[in-house]
Amino acid sequence: MSNLSNPGMLWLFLLFIPLIAWYVYSRRTSAPTLRMPSTMAFDKLSTSWKVIFGHVLFAAKLAAIGCLIMILCRPQSHDSWSTSDVEGTDIVVALDVSTSMLARDFRPNRLDAAKDVATQFVSGRDHDNIGLVLFAGESFTQVPMTMDNATLVNAINEVQTGVLVDGTAIGDGIATAINRIKDGKAKSKSVILLTDGSNNTGVVAPHTAAQVAQKYGIKIYTIGVGSNGNAPYPVAIDYAGNIQYQTMPVVIDEATLRKIAATTGGKYFRATSKDVLKSIFAEIDKLEKTHLDVQKFSHTEDHYLPWAIALLALLMFVFVGEYTVMRHIP
Image 1 (cartoon, rainbow, N blue to C red):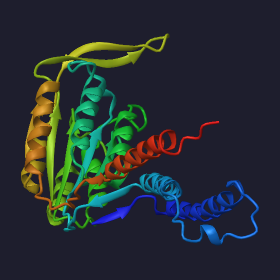
Image 2 (cartoon, rainbow, N blue to C red):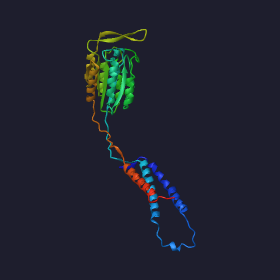
Image 3 (cartoon, rainbow, N blue to C red):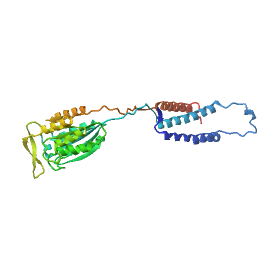
Image 4 (cartoon, rainbow, N blue to C red):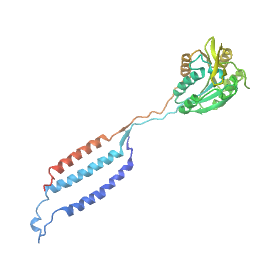
């Protein structure tokens, strides 16, 4: 299918009216005249070929202007395209922001490592509704369900500890995620929960939240974040505002996280390093991939080249004609 990108430029063809009027007027006033009592002697003479060639040159100039106008209109061609329904996946990332997520067994710490990996995961899910829930001693929705990846990435990058009462309310985090995702239209719904501790506060018990998720058909992928053995944990802040660390045993309630995942049909992962965390998100990405039929558009191609070639040829013709056949010698 062909069309013009700038059809309004066609109005420039109205310039032909004053140009033709000016040409007719100039031909009448600029030609030399001679007063004679009668022109009968010249009636049988034919029009000079130079006069005809002058008209041809003027027509070529108009044609050149017309080619320039067509170039400005940008003639284009579009291939056909088809539209099909897109069925994405609803996902909520529930991220633990308790103080312990600042532990430095990951570089630079657990929270920043989780943010980096979550950002990469979100950036690759173009057709999914994704939300972000933060939890510590309580939970709240940082970003509601959206397909705006840029907004999600910015929100994840701005996540910090200290925005919530400290603690680890895993059940509350799951409950908030369920409220965000349960009314979604996608057939596949899942929650990715990252935490580095054990449930020690909150209103909703983790197992209860898992049963509610199962009722709504929501899978929960739980990720225990923390290396094996000991890790430097934040324990205090000195007078200069610097965080003081102390090496302590890593304690993650893996039994509860496994039970949550098993109840909902999800899967439990243990992330002992940032590289392992990346591989976990890559596996979840494959598990939650939905076959999508998306709109396929063909590229748009400009077709101004023929008009440009014609413009160049006409200008050359006018130039040669003006400085050879129609050249005036003083």
